[in-house]
Structures are given as structure tokens and as C-alpha cells.
Length: 161
Image (cartoon, rainbow, N blue to C red; front, side, top):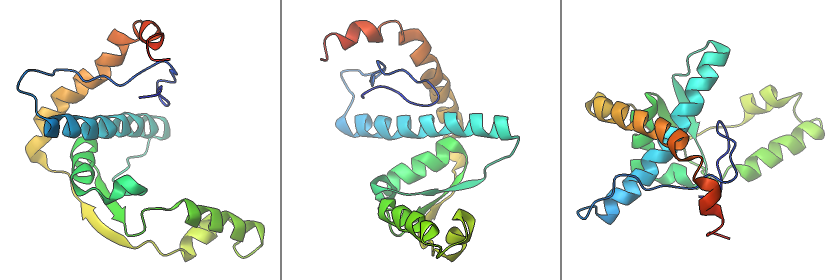
């Protein structure tokens, strides 16, 4: 909504609702927003896996969004990865405490701090194969939209200032 970061790096990129019709309901718009978050995550995972030559099978979901069950399931379905939503969603303070502990010598390094930090999993979400084909088609559309619209974003930016 305010520019795009990795992997696009375009400060003028904006959110786009694509495929709306007269019958589109607000629930579908919210779901589309959740799907776009998951598509962006999948795009990053694909890059990471390609560059590291390692498969990522699961990841932790943190932050306020981690408390939203439908979003976590959508992320699992779209990324094809198991999502572990943590109990404590607001983790910025925990991260700051870990860095402080490293600086104070309480922990040897970041790995040591992580070993000693409890990660309570609230719920895990496994990818469902039921939505696989539909999401594959939507992902291809998602990936092509930016390239088709990027030249229009500078024009749109002049109206959003």
C-alpha cells in the first residue's frame, strides 16, 4: 500500500485489487488481501530456497497477524509450508531483550539466546492440497501483475500525495 520491498524494491508500487466484479463481497476482498500477503511470502521463500539450495519446510508466524487463524491457513496453503503461530505474537520486545542479553554477556551469541528462549506454539497449520491448483493459478497472476503495472505506478503516485 506504500511501496514494495523485497524482492521488488519499488517505493512507488501500490496495492491493487484485481478481478473485482459487481458480485464481489467484502469478505472476498479481505481474503484477497490475506492471499496477497501469502503470495509475497511465497515469492521470498522461493528466492531464499533457490539461493541457499535448501528447502524450508516450516516457519514461525509472529506479530499481530499471527493471531489470525484464516491468514495462517492461507499462508500455509499458498507457501506449501507448515506454519507455527507462536503464543506470544508481539515479539519485538523479546528480540530487544535477547539483543540486550547478548550485549550484557548473558548469552554467548544469538544462537545461544535462541536455544534458551521458549517458543510456545499456539497452533500449527499444515498446507491443504485441496486449494493447490486454484492457488497455483492465482500465484501466476500475482507474479505477473507487478511487471504489467509497474510503469503505471509513477503516474498513480501523483494522485496519492
